[in-house]
Image (cartoon, rainbow, N blue to C red; front, side):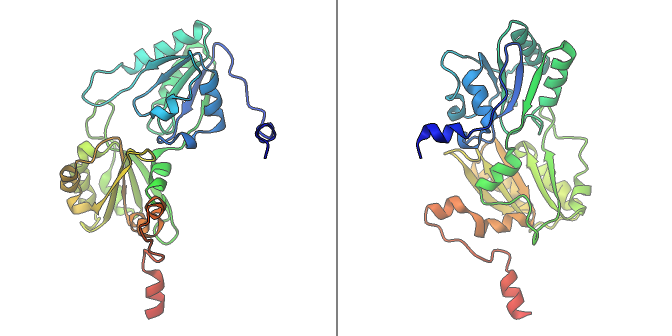
Length: 284
């Protein structure tokens, strides 16, 4: 098909007006996972205020000449405060720029996008929110792990593994989550894996519960560690797996044996019955 005809079929997207801030999700890392609105914003923004989790491939799509402003927040390292970031967005918009606030994953899923949007609202700055693919769904999918599967779970809990200052979250009832018997997907959990695993087992999850850690999901540096709850902290430390990482706990991890499509592309065989359902039916 003629590329010009293909482009003509794109929807009529909203204009990125001067003085506006677009809060945009950049997805888990692969530039191909950007939305059409995110791609448009990158091509038109005067300044891009981005965090540490936005991949280089995504940043490379910014308009030539756009001002690139790093506003990453990484545990244990000097970083701008949240009020400083919000005030910067307000100032840039009031100066008449098209301001793109680019955040890894989805801005409203553990991305503090809600805080920034409220700050813009208080300042009277117009904004648009452009959702992105969160790592708890897209990152797991790139590892061959579905967030839900009717033979494995009927609910999924998305939980943060640390507070803004890096401490273990004190507002999460891990034991209650464990007692629900459903899949648990934990963001930013590597630092507190031992404590989290202990609480989940105290809540009733077996030490043999499958766990997967997906590091740098959907990027060329993606790495996946499969283990079990009882040894996850030690295994993670021994493996040297690094943040940013997403952690999946529960039966959904078993499905990776049959759904690791990236591994299949490299020639690794897939198990068509990873949960053993067909075998059970044959012997039942």
